[in-house]
Structure formats: structure tokens, C-alpha cells
Figure 1 (cartoon, protein in one colour):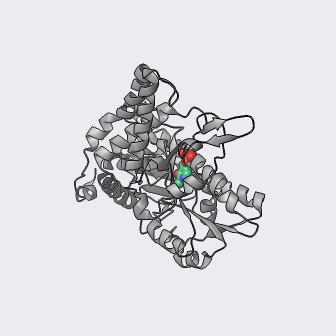
Figure 2 (cartoon, helix red, strand yellow; figure 1 turned 45 degrees about the vertical axis):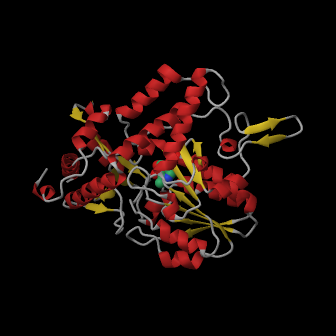
Length: 416
Ligand code: PLP
């Protein structure tokens, strides 16, 4: 760590201890210690999550809800405990408001089909923001094409902040849903969700929040935010892939019709008619990702133990240090300089293509993401083909930022 790093407050987390929990951080890449700055795409998993999944398969594995035997009851208990933990983590009023899904994408699609589609008339509007991930753009486009509704986009400024004045002007009775990202994966912007919800409520507009990038980095309280739906993915928050959740207000979930039919989600079936379970069961058709949900519960436990305020504070220090350090590199330009920002450093390095940057620094053991980050309108907005993105996690250190900076400097040197 250099001198400027030492004036930053000591961390509230024992990062050495955290790192020891992540077995993958022991490995090398191209003969160099792995430096992982791609947590935004998928976080690494601590041994507590890995061991929980291992224990489930070794000792408790069975299908849930329908078995009377011991293993099935144990598996059901573990699965439902994970729902309870997930609800507690986001301060949901009830575990019944947590629907397990495959992740953020499926959660958004569920709301699109089960909540929004039945309410849409031609000429109605769906409002999203310019900085959405494709998963909060494409489902709405598909729905608009099908129904004759119109997709409207709230603009952002050059710092990558939402134009709140424009948002206010775009709210009207025609808007049937406002979908907005909590933390932008491409820019790091933290959007003022509570304010947005207050404004939307004045027009009776339900708000869906894409929380994929907020969950691992800050405390999320769905009641304080005042939203109607909150979507997230296990793999972004140190849990397994293939699992995530939709939180929805009970009144909405109760009124919604399931969009997938099958086993588990029914109460009674005849050839003439089927009746459905209550929420959340009616949205979890078929055998769910049982081990995944239990693993996500372990990830929740892990983050709860660290304390999300501590996580946010540590990552804010890393972001401040990284922003200053990388800015000293010739040709470095940060893309996304919002006043409220989470641990994402999206950047360009002179004329060097982002993919070249990513490939070269991989040789130094440094993993970053390059491309459009599934947010093509964002890179188009800045007139770029791609950016390089270093995204931060709980296990990153100042020393790793120094390694990143050094690798980027060497990259620049190769193109001089
Ligand atoms: N929203 C944001 C902001 C994301 O960063 C991502 C993933 O990168 C998603 C949604 C989609 O998440 P998933 O692929 O886990 O469904």
C-alpha cells in the first residue's frame, strides 16, 4: 500500500480473515496470485456457503414439501429457513413475500408476466431508466411489443446520474410500472430509490427495483425504500448461481396469477380446472433449486455477520483509494462519476480497446470485466464500444488496487 492509502481509516472488517474464507483466493493465474475484481459479474463464495451446500447433499438431500420421511422434512425446513433468512435480510414484513427464482432476470420476468401484463392496455407506458441492465429492458420491450404499450426511458447526465426533473415530468397515470436499478452495474451509480418511490406513489405507480448490485454492498430495507418489488440474485451476494429472489408486497403477490404451471404450485388439480397455492408457493412451479436456496441462506448469514454497514464502509474506502490511484494513470478516464457511487470502477484507457486491457492484465493475475456489461445503452450514451470494469468485493484490498494500477500502467506502456 502506498502513503495515501495509510491516511484512510482502518477497516471495520478483518479483511485478512475474510480472505481466508474464500478458498479460490489461494489460487494463482498465469503464475500470479489471483486478484479478483469481477465481483459485479459474479462474486466468489466463502467456505461457509460451499460447506453448507456440501452438507445439504451429503446429509439432508431430498425433495421438499411433499415427503413425509425425515430427509424430506429436513430439506423442507432448511429451504424454508433460507426464505426466512432472506426475508429478514431485506426487512421484508413476511417470509411469504419472498419468491425463490433463478435470479434477478427471472424475478423481473415474473413481475412482467404476472403483474404488469394483465394491467396493460395499448398506449399505456412502462418507465425504466437509461442505466438499466438488459434484464430490466428486454422483458419490458417484449411486453410492449405484445400489448401495444410504450417503453419510456428516463435520461441520465454525463456523470451517470438519473435526471430527476425528467423523471418527475414522465410520471403520469399512463405509467403502469416504473422499473429502476438500485445500483448500476456499468457505472456504480446508487439511485435515490426511496425518493423515486415517493414520487411514483403520488401517481399510484408501482415500482420494481433491480437490486442485483445493491444486495452485496449495502443494507437493503424494502420497507424503508417503499418499493413494490425488489429483485436480486444469489451469485452476486456470495451465494450460489441459479438462485435468487423476488420480494413483492403481499397484496400484489396475492393478486397475481402464476405464469408457470406445474407441480408444487397447485392446491387441487382435475382435468377441468386447477386451483393454485398461496404465494409464494404458486410462483415456484416444479422442483426448485433447493441446495441453491439453502446456499443463499448461508450467504445471507455470512453477510449479516459481517454487517452490511461495515461492508459498505470498507468498499467505499477501496473505491476512494482506487479512484484516486487509477486517475493518475496516463489516458485513464472513469465512466460513471455519480456523487452516490458503489464499488464499480468502469473506465477507458486512452485508445486501447477494453478487451485488450482485460486480456493483458489477466496475464498479471488480475480479473476484470470488459465489454458493454449487459447495459449497451450505457456505453452507447458515452459514445464508447466498451469499457473495462473493476468491481469491488468484501475480499479486495488496497494492495490489490496497487497491483491493478501497476498492471494498467504496464498495459499503457505496451501501447506507447
Ligand atoms: N441487474 C443488474 C444490475 C446486474 O448487474 C445483473 C447481472 O449482471 C442482472 C440484473 C442480472 O442478474 P442475473 O443474471 O443474475 O439474473
